[in-house]
Length: 326
Image 1 (cartoon, rainbow, N blue to C red):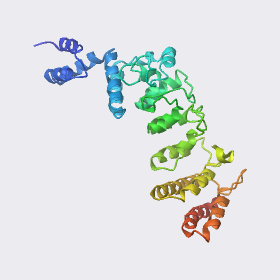
Image 2 (image 1 turned 180 degrees about the vertical axis):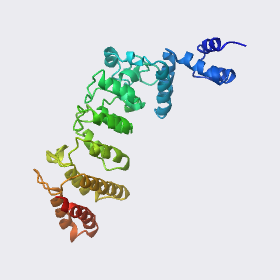
Image 3 (image 1 turned 90 degrees about the horizontal axis):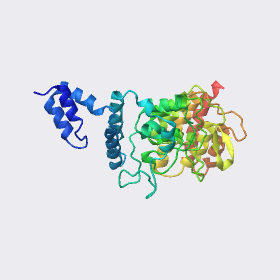
Image 4 (image 1 turned 135 degrees about the horizontal axis):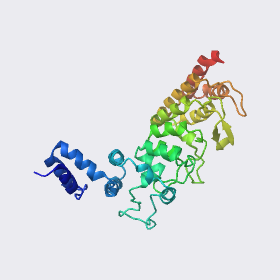
């Protein structure tokens, strides 16, 4: 019989990418397996490299396993914060490259495979659900939460605003955390692509079902003012209120088939949420107030297109129901 410490030391030479380590743990039993785990993970950067390679090879579809692998490693290596360095953050801002441009190719695809990427790149930390790492980078390393200099594995070579990364990766926890940071600017562009004028706020306000939690997170934020003109609308060169923005979106959602129906239902829901949270449909701004927009659209469609008119009437009824509050 071999002692647990000796078994654990021998196990550190096993490869995690095949069945060697699993077979040793199964043979050693539960008590020894825990010692093996601790010994194997201690300062084992190859374990993290393997996790990244598996994630990349799987096309970015197993982020939960990659997150769990990194969390297991962090639980043993509790000094992981020391891996977050200025040099690291500078070198690991970009983790995906166009073909032939990757200086540290770990696979046939142009991705950087470095074990410390998630500890130095907040976009990758969001991608893997490592919120503790994100918080450390923001609060202790003082990274710029509005910078559009980061790429992550699923974004190709697109450099993005961190809040837009949270939206794209469907990480409501990361999004809520970024909202709690005073410096976060949702009116910033989603990335550094100058051909796009899409802001983080407009992306979050997109009328589709999977964006609803992000819309609610913004509305629930203590600093949110439902009557403040915060949304830049390039088509009219104006900054408008959220309620006005949904009036414009609704005008386009009255056309089309099932997709348009889903968008309309999503807009109805968001309009009601805004009204319930103090949005004033009669507030005068540099463009028409929301109530006037809905009324004008209803009148325009009433005689020629009863179906569209009925859609606008539903908006008007919601507005009239809220009228007594203002």
